Image (cartoon, rainbow over all chains, first blue to last red; front, side):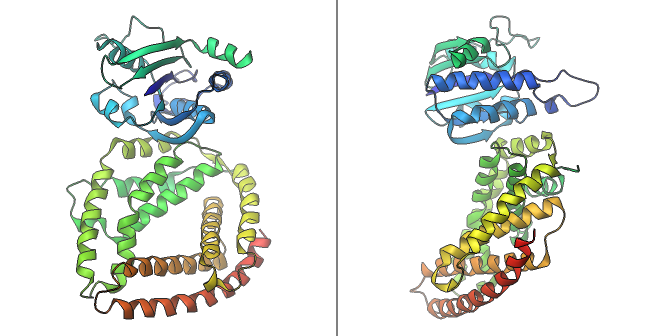
Length: 164
Length: 239
């Protein structure tokens, strides 16, 4: 399985009592993420599944990513919490994208590639810099420690590919 | 312009899917299953109005998950007392049990949660969508004569009319003529489903006779649909 882990694009800042899960993407975040998706399109990456969290910024990011999709989208709350075995068990497909949130994506990446959990007890992930709209591309069997890191790309790199 | 939130049908979706896996069969009766499928269909249309690609696959998946039970309900509603219906009732109980298990999957919880976070659809976008759908429905109803000879055409019209009705009801109300036509088309589909299920049990006592009755009813219904479409077409043209 080729697995593309995306962090959602830039979202509106938290404000007052508004629920965190309802934060929408900013216009800039949307435009940049779309350009990054077009960068992947230039790399001829096609997805057969997109899994995303039920939070609005992840829904909107997955929607933008759907230009690469020839298959199904799946919503799962398992991407809005620390990664679990259950998340790995539901994954199906050959070219699969996950759209989620930090610090859980970094935790998942470390778990899949090194077999160790990256997240510290304070919820921070000190080793990886998963920027908003960033991508980690891993390949192999979706099991802890069984995947190889193919690329870890900041959103800017993807946008440049889209422009070139 | 008015905003259209998904609340009305999201609440029903949530209510129907919040059933525990251990809930008794009676808690997932024919009405509950039908309403679950209607809620999915209406929310798919709501997503269309907002121009969303996302979450439609989840709603379609949930709708499909309830299809077997719904199809059996259509037959059992009418033929539950027949000697051959016992096996279908047992299949229905198994299907309902599977469906309750489906409700406990994270995907269902995520779906309800996701739709609840989404922004309302603007009435303006809904009206734009309506224009295209109006044309599509008129196209689907073109050359509808000889309905009984071309059921595929009727099913195309049924899907278009259902979608149009849902769009209109998200905006305000659907004209009575359209609702009446859609109900009739839905009944026709139920008969077609019953015929298909009975077709698999043709060799059992009494099934052939029941099939014969259904076939006659279906033919009579085709005539009614042509008449109802004549009335509804004028309404659709005026939308």
